[in-house]
Image (cartoon, rainbow, N blue to C red; front, top):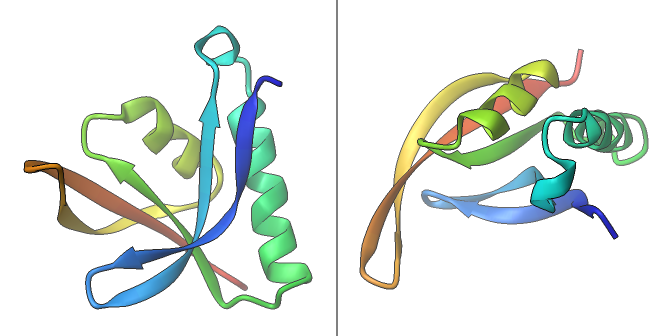
Length: 99
């Protein structure tokens, strides 16, 4: 298995949002797999689930994943600092809406 990509409901501030998440083994980075999989998830969310929007929630320092979101037609809309085990981790939310 080279990694994973899919749709999940994720907490964002005071609500839950439909997120496209992806995580691939390092040996498969920068080969287009994340972008291809994320685009397929977006298509499924809009065409099958009839979602109005999907997002990707990405650490502020993860520029590679931010670029995947941009290639998936998403734009950065807001930010939020999540707290994991006593550590503040700023995240950005990238969103695309159904046309």
